[in-house]
Image (cartoon, rainbow, N blue to C red):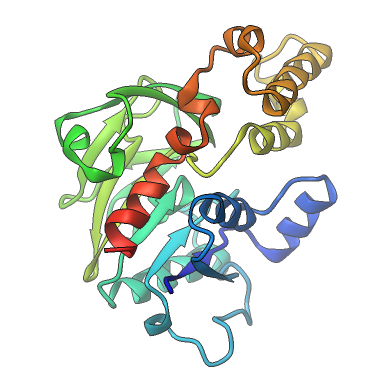
Length: 278
């Protein structure tokens, strides 16, 4: 039976604060997304952003078939323990030669670990939906994107981005906001398959995440006022409840790339099929 290690990107205290506001932890979102398609896969979560946390008693990397790195509200270029310890765990895991999958934070710390750069995006937040992500020739041929269109939208939220890829990395896709939306990062004896957006998210999660930043979203002119913001969130929530509502889908500018679970999570599904189940 396959077994995955999920590395939670946020501290336990931040997870508690988010949960109090009704927002699921980054690792819980990943566990939910994987279980929906692979109910027999066993998953353990490691809280590497906190001191005193480790793998389950008696467990080692040899017990896992792969590592999944969730999102995070941290900055990959910071040098605090909660960041550097996650990079150290990633480096240690990749000495096993086993596969790694990362979303957003996962891409960023893999790039840092491999000698690349991450910085605050000069274009500000990319939030809600990353539009028109275009696969390059390498991306179109890569198994992570089996079943994806050559240009697609994806759920996202990030304010940092890759400023330069490691020399041995392969760029897979980009859009007008971020020059790196997906890449393969050789690290240690492993490869990290990673994207800047969040294939593990659903509309419910993006609604929760946006609600955490209501004041920021208004201040940064994504919305004219709080009423406009709340009306937008109400539409997302309504479409989550009824994904077949064509009017709401049109108003929000989304299609099956967002609304169909298998299409939205294709990168996760393809990684598991190609790297874990073979």
